[in-house]
Length: 80
Image 1: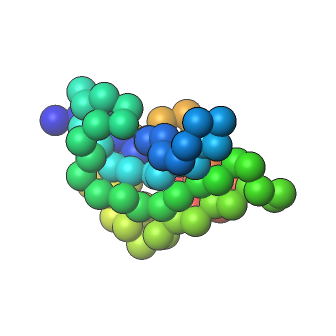
Image 2: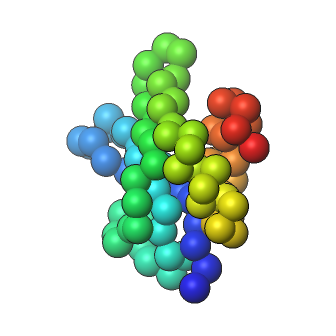
């Protein structure tokens, strides 16, 4: 099973807020996930990035691959 760290969209129309989740790569974007490890709100100034660093490092250690967007968030928080 290929596991990824990726964003799922929550929030209302024209008000995107994202959760950073651990999910099977075959599941749909807003579908089933394994665990929530953070959240991201691009509408605040500066953007709000909240990540559970311990959970993220744990999943990366288990072989989970971050998506491109999540990779940028991890780099912004100096977690990688």
